[in-house]
Amino acid sequence: GNSVTQMEGPVTLSEEAFLTINCTYTATGYPSLFWYVQYPGEGLQLLLKATKADDKGSNKGFEATYRKETTSFHLEKGSVQVSDSAVYFCALQVNTGNQFYFGTGTSLTVIP
Amino acid sequence: SQTIHQWPATLVQPVGSPLSLECTVEGTSNPNLYWYRQAAGRGLQLLFYSVGIGQISSEVPQNLSASRPQDRQFILSSKKLLLSDSGFYLCAWRGQSNNQPQHFGDGTRLSIL
Image (cartoon, rainbow over all chains, first blue to last red; front, side):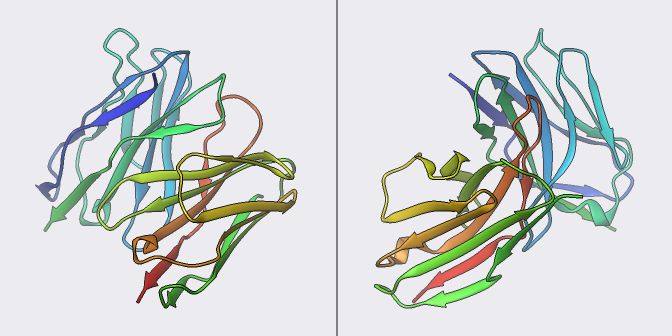
């Protein structure tokens, strides 16, 4: 079947630290992969996406590379800021279906 | 550009009362539409999705229902709310083409007393 597994949180980092949030997936077809960010009390916002193997999605200093060989799409940022504190969701969509499959979310808190 | 609107933003309802949450999309046609529920501190649970007017797929058995009376309107309803219906409800839309992301509304915070 289709599923997404994210690293358990919460994650607490100091400002300017390096961030990695792990995401692995299983898919029956050829998935597109996404990272979403949710700030407190808000809906989810698309952060970045990758639609085929070896694609790198990037936005606002965040990056993730679609690794087919390891079925992974880890989110990274070189230097986090307090404003990056939020919940991050990894998701996949198989191109033959209408549904999205979300991970359980990883809460990130960045302290000054 | 496309926009999605959800209302109300917050709602407090007594147990046993009815519910109607509305979601509308502007700037696109024939979108896929979705309703999710997010319990406090938890992930997303897909409740319903729709690929066209009058076409509703339900993911979980529950006392909620969904309807799509117009192309860009998606309504979540209940005849009698339960305490377990409390949560954060999110509407999302997606274009019909492959590889398109979902785009989310700002959500409705529903509290059942």
